[in-house]
Image (cartoon, rainbow, N blue to C red):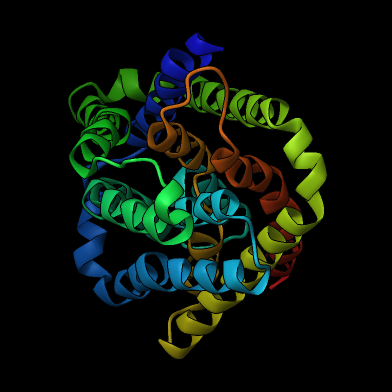
Length: 285
């Protein structure tokens, strides 16, 4: 289990983020300036409204401190590759989805460490583990930002090779995601069984609320229908693998996944159950 937490988990997340970078090109970042209005709405939804909604959900469901912190950690994570795939399935604006995921992922090393440290202190009080913002930021850089940058560089300087490995790399990323989610659930199985109703209810409510909030905000911003669908999914779908990894970094647990990782693990399953009806509706229009 020590190898799983200290080696397999960060390596898997790095591969997942590398696969995101390989799928990017310079034009994806240029679209941020070209469609600044749509990007700004998406960024506000992800960086501000998402954590605020998660905070309200933790209060409404009166969650245990570690579970509440786990949900907050999940809310700080960007969409990841999953949101890009779901945006494509929904006939949304995939370019906007990719741009949002890329930029928010790169900026996460500046925002996530501070927000995580605040959440741990707020919900856990005197029982809170010590969180080093600098160490957390450096770890995030190594397992998220650096792999994305390397992937983008590979796509730019070795386009043919990047295109050749893109599909198998994406499949590997999906397989690693499934393994990590199942491992986190298995490690905390007793806690999961005892709290499945409240955790599942809170996560389903959070997911559904965020999908609606993203859609409404995009509507108020007078975006196109494809852009609205993308903003909805980018707001409602998070990188649960990163949430599990952050929980491990915060707690320093090496002999198994902590309870703090449980919300991200459960969310890795429930997000599809909640998103599928939205995707079916999006595809029909």
